Image (cartoon, rainbow, N blue to C red; front, side, top):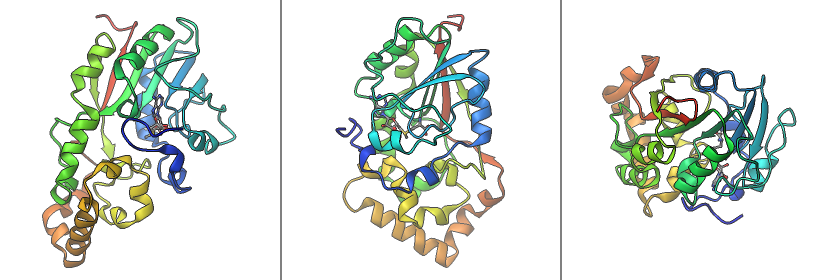
Length: 256
Ligand SMILES: C[S@@+](CC[C@H](N)C(=O)[O-])C[C@H]1O[C@@H](n2cnc3c(N)ncnc32)[C@H](O)[C@@H]1O
């Protein structure tokens, strides 16, 4: 598979990915609630199968061979394919979900149009609002990350428009979130020092040369000296923080 336009090649992932990027039960509950009473659910950019509901019929589609191969044998196998060209009939599914994937698509508008074509009910997108306020401190160490995020995720309005209107739901990320995306580690700064943890977070691949090393060196020094704890240590006690994670819920069941 060629790298996605975001420049991240999921086929070159190391074997650590499935160990670090797994279903977080609290997030799963919020996602599944938005699926309503859907019996059939399409999961696009399905990856290794995180967040796929166990009590509904799921069809998964995923372009990366490596991600497909890492799916548990308890899940349905994923079909090889991209969201921009879905091999399904109109209105084939009660609901669809697209979780932490829209920023990788070749064509957001085309992908959302395809989701609307094949889905009768809710379309649940989990993504980040890069312009929203956040208490997450990583940008203090890696300031270049802000530009990367603005470029990758773009304005939320673009996703809302592409879905033909949508409701935006703020998500709480808890201190013990099991899915180790960046903000999930807000109270576990030491995790960022581990190469395999960062390797399972695609944003690092887009930084200008040297930015990752500089940021991680500064973080390591501040953790050693106690400076990190002086500045942000209270977050270790916080059960959740204000962050940029959002559900964008569109689809025909919405009133607009
Ligand atoms: C961060 S992973 C998220 C996987 C899964 N949804 C999850 O929440 O764990 C992003 C996924 O999007 C997939 N992807 C990239 N481009 C895509 C496209 N055009 N259509 C569908 N999926 C795509 C990648 O291969 C990758 O598996």
